[in-house]
Amino acid sequence: MTRSRLQARCDNDTIEQVEAYADEKDISQSEAVRRLIRTGLVQKGHRSPQAAGYTEATINRWVRLIGGALIGILLLVLLVVQFL
Image 1: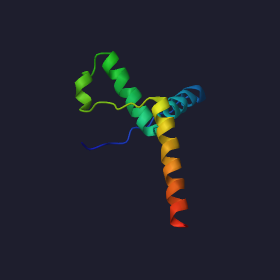
Image 2 (image 1 turned 135 degrees about the horizontal axis):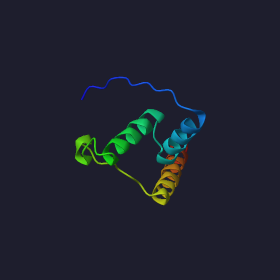
Image 3 (image 1 turned 90 degrees about the vertical axis):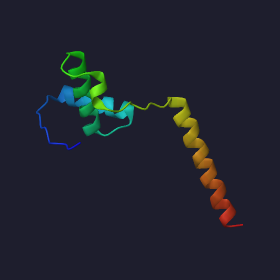
Image 4 (image 1 turned 180 degrees about the vertical axis):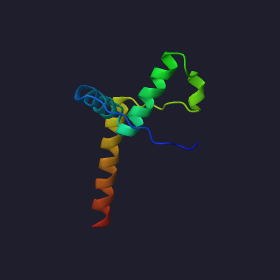
């Protein structure tokens, strides 16, 4: 799928909301805008939900937190083992 550039001017409140959405989903602002546009088109009936051709993966906040901590611990253990 080829992508073309789409530009829009937004008020500061809208930009802040897009940034908050991107931070919440841990995605780039560009991806946030793409998702929000797709969602709007689906809700208004201009696009079928299956047209995107993908499913959105989500991860539980606690799973991300615990997984990150475990990876950090593993890296620390590997670092200690290297110097023993």
